[in-house]
Length: 334
Ligand code: BTN
Image 1: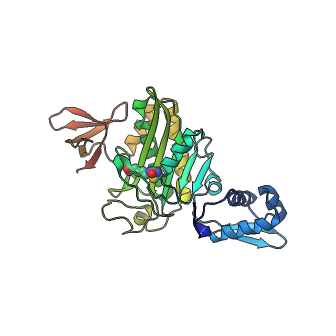
Image 2: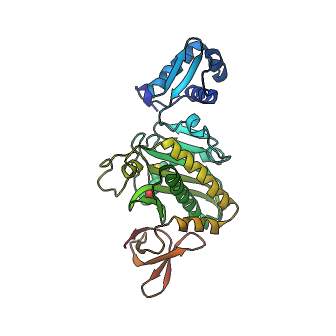
Image 3: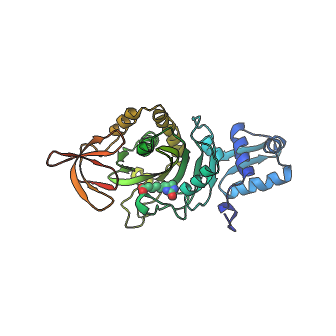
């Protein structure tokens, strides 16, 4: 990314490495040891520290004791995100950018060039963030979480929507655990709070015959947007609006990746029922009267009764007939 503001340039490998060794040190680390561990000489080390300070890091530099990290900003840098992350697959590798067109597009580019499963791509801002059905995803700098995960699940293509269900469940659990807010899943790809959208999921797949070659699971979570901070046409909210206080994007992203690893393990072992059960527990859709609008504009109304074996929504029409809703949008009526 080209910019004249050093704090908005992409974080370099050296910066990330220094944050990592200072976090590991849990106290002061001598200048010599810090420069040895990240593999740079002392003079450039001073430049790296200066850059990190411009980004909001506070680093104590003591002439005898050395360096100590005393404060880190809420940036989703690999070293910050992976410290304490309890996963073996998801997020073991994190690629971070201050600005991307779309983290899903970047993840797709990486996946086709051989990036391993589990890699997470994070952007602090997106210039062309996208949602389902050709919609744009509002992606202001540092306020939301915009991340995409590269997955290579052993999954039939017609079951790809289980990836979206896994992600929706995982975001909902992360929000509940970190903030205590009563987030809930809304079919097919939303997480809602107080009836408004707080998170959207965009799953994009590449198939090979009837099976998935790889999938990109994209998550957009409104974390710290202010009231009135959304374009007026969006019926959206953020965690900060609902909680009345800013949230740690790092803590949320970590909680999400950990929850995703658990639900993805269910998927890998073929436990689709386990995913559906978890989704039903967290759902505001089932049992509600809904209006479903299909991609070609047809409208059906009825009561949502559950999910079928492919993750499609089951809708009981007023005449008693049950229909499968496979795509499009739904709105909750009562
Ligand atoms: C939707 O609700 O329609 C899905 C929105 C998905 C947005 C996320 S933000 C991170 C990832 N990158 C994108 O361009 N889109 C997804």
